[in-house]
Length: 323
Ligand SMILES: [Zn+2]
Figure 1 (cartoon, rainbow, N blue to C red):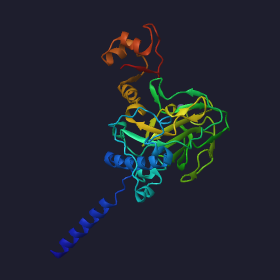
Figure 2 (cartoon, helix red, strand yellow; figure 1 turned 120 degrees about the vertical axis):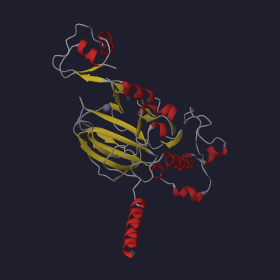
Figure 3 (cartoon, protein in one colour; figure 1 turned 45 degrees about the vertical axis):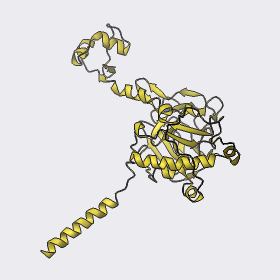
Figure 4 (cartoon, rainbow, N blue to C red; figure 1 turned 120 degrees about the horizontal axis):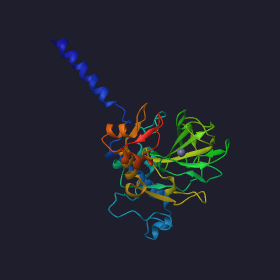
């Protein structure tokens, strides 16, 4: 009998130990994200404000900050308590709950819906990542897919620089996608992606200063010509870099930027619309009418969705949208 109790005790201890050591870097609960956002905001406000600005009873430099934030958004302004502020010197540590993956671009599993209503990000030490700069393909819907970055023209071998201070999180090669790419976790809470490089010049976990050369431009991976595919992400969710980067002048638009679900992630509806679309790969012997019948639609509808006319010859292997 005693032995049974002993075995039971051992089993319970094991289960308890396993549970309490379970790493939480795969999934940050939305509540804790909100909590850490509050901390991060606290620091950023404090850091981005000079004493003079505070004395004017205007907590944020009105010229340089977006005005789209409403009073009811959950922003937490800074606490004067010095002890607390010293704990949160690097907002990203708190935002990402110290989670770190050198394997997955988005290990956080925080959907756009679970993002906080509003977070203030310090953008002051931004450096434009390349020397050239015209946009060749913007963020957004492209040929029925979503393009999460902004493509910037460059020549093979041009230097590519880090946009903000931070630490290199991923250096990898994806032959069918990003090619040679780098992901940097920035101290301000953003993450950036630099893809299609001809060469990466940094290593995982390397501390990077804003403007530091991290790689050379190229056309590796799924790319039709030399360019930099540049992304900015917040808690794993990409947003349009054009919201904060002035591509005409190679500058940042704001010293501090409010990331808001409503404005920064305005493209959420486009993503949802794309999810509704359905495609069929054309097989041998198929015609518009057999495909229409298969999906319970009409030839006219297929023609309209795909900008075809009834006489078009279908090419085997191509995709055709049916919804
Ligand atoms: Zn791209």
